[in-house]
Length: 460
Image (cartoon, rainbow, N blue to C red; front, side, top):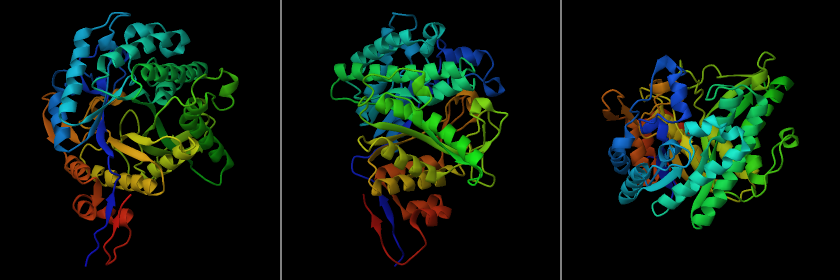
């Protein structure tokens, strides 16, 4: 009898997709990313415009999520909509968010709400944003307002999305607004974002004691181009430490790694200021020592030749599709954080406009998640980036991550094969051999091993 392997996930596992307000809602013209867009920084000069039109019709996509039997959906609140001017609250905007969350609840989909996903009001940015510690009070006030307004509809919060990306891209590399290139400012922003998370955590805990509160960091692997080269290993380790682990260490202990800890004071109350760890993982990069790139700690990053990779030719290289990297990150975060909190994969996705690699990539990444769970890592959910194609920051509409294709001009939706497959996974709470055979037969061996004649189910 032919084998019938099954990778079954824990009961109550959250299956969903992730999104961000600016990328999906449309019509957001009062934040620093809109200004960045108008300055011509987007690939091919594209503009967000209506985006995926969620502000007027998110419910049509929520229905598609329901059809895939997703039991969770991650979305964000656009701060510049609800506080367009300092101290002035837009009640109608809050009511629209209430309607969106109510619709999700009626579909038995758990809302997971991000309070800061790269964007902020122009008035806040013009005051210096998170370069100024005094501005944290404005963020905390906004958090309190939103939680009080939405607490009956949401009890699962992400305070800040990818603070490491926000700081490095915006203040070191200069590829996100405000486009600065200053190590000093980057460190200031790193420090203040952790302070902001801690302040937001205790604000939400006071207002909604039973809620789940955390943050999500972007993790990517930095492997030395030549493992035998001391210089390659040194610069890869430096990039890994600063980008992946400094923020986590500060959020866990209140202290950054040396030498940053010598430049900024400890963060009081950081230890314990999370109920879970959110993990965003996409790729790995190889790193080679190069003295010509001091802003990148003298390590030039590149994609290993011959690998299966995301779409190329974009403003940002989304790089290699490397499933083992997600397993490595899950194990490392759990170990680094002393194993005291559950983990959620709050983003994982693939830039694949023709959907030729996405089915296999999803299956192989989820197999790595299952492996980590089997080995004792308490992973509680997986959010695929993204439900629908959206306006992908500097890449505009050129980077297609959606399970569902969107024509931004007509707003037509076309579900991809990967949407059908993801729905089957969510419905079964498992990956079956039949699924792999139908959607990515080339991945059978990598997921289940070499063929044999046994029947086997792998529960967790």
